[in-house]
Image 1: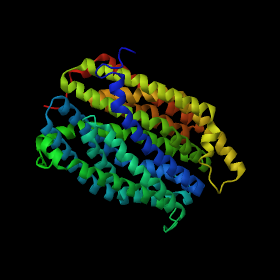
Image 2: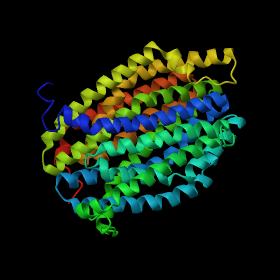
Image 3: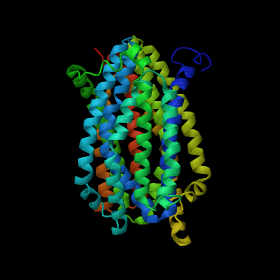
Image 4: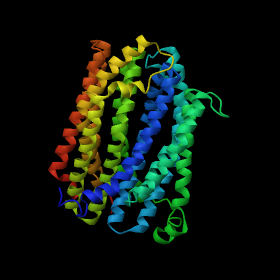
Amino acid sequence: MKSLWSEPFGYKHVLNISMPLAVSMASTTIMQVTDRIFLGHYSMEAIAAALPAGILSFLFISFFMGVASYINVFIAQYTGAAKPERVASSLWQGIYFSIGSWLILVVMGFWLTPLLKSGGHPPEVLVLEIQYFRILMLGAGLPVLDTALSGFFAGRGLTRTVMVVNMIGAAVNIPLDYALINGIWIFPELGIRGAGIATISAMAVIVSIYIPLIFNSENEKKFRIRSNFHFEPVLFKRFIKFGMSNGVQFFLDIFAITFFVYMVGRLGTVILAASNIVLSIDGVSFFPAYGIAVGVSTLVGQAIGQGRPDYARRATKCAFHITTIWMLFMGIIYLVIPEVLLDLFRPDNITDIQFMDLLDYGTHFLLFTAAYILFDGMALVYSGALKGAGDIVFVMKSVGLCCVVVMVIPCYVGVEIYPSGPYFLWSIFTLYVIILSAAFYYRFRTGKWESMKVIE
């Protein structure tokens, strides 16, 4: 391990690329967690509605974000191949895709609310879910555009810029969130609607910061960033070919979680609220690890562009070690202080008896989280490495198969046919993560990805 510290694509290199992305994802997590905390204190109905509606909106956004995020791999491989003009062309294809996606997502926001009704949640929760969902879908194009624009920096390894921009977005979101939910200062009390408006506002700030950072004279000289604005059918088609698989994979992964949440929601408001809180807490460990996985995709893409798969293996190995340390640390916290974590989300209008039920369920759900957390890190790192090389079809097929066979069918049977309770559902969720991690690790070890490339 000591000898790998200073070598190219070793620990130091991985940390320099991945840690800003991990911090960036952590700031996103903090935004989401504080959002849940504020809504939890506002009312139990609000916290119960926030995750189902939030996940459903993200379910549809995730496909387009997954496609747009593959711009990162194109830019990484073009950077490794020393083709700066193709970096600009790739970015523009991502921008065109993002704008088209926005129009589609806005329409979907008004036509897909019946899906919320099919969840069978209590009427007072359903009303809040619909409000939150429609507001998030109105601004759904912003995170897709943010994903494409951030790829210009992340794909070239300039991840500190991404970190700073996202931290500014969090700094805007958190106080605005609190003010709009509770009616503080000059703002009206909007409850869950205020949470949605604050989220969209923060994303608009992030996008507005990226624009002058990218389309300036310096980048025009180096990349011809303004001149290479043309739509290129051949490049766009290749981007869609790989990006579509990534989008489908991302969609299916989020769909599995969404289906899990909706099945849990059929077991009662307290169980749903406890599950939502635990999944929000789990985001504290997941999103920084996801940032490391994005860094791995960047490094693997650059290594493949240079024709050095050995560098890609080294970067993945180092990233896995770093992720393991982080996940172990978070798993210990979940085991040692579960009550403290759950108490952060305690609604103000809940009785002590209701909260004791929520606390009991939440403590047990955190045990499941601690059980799968290391496998979650493994799945993120090795899938990130496979994506960076262009082996995205395998990742997509693996997630699709596990989504249907391991998650959807058993959860449906465990709720609708042979009622088995919330612990059965959480066992299925844990198994889903473990099987995916094993599949990605095995595929990486075969080395088939070493001969793949997404660029010409």
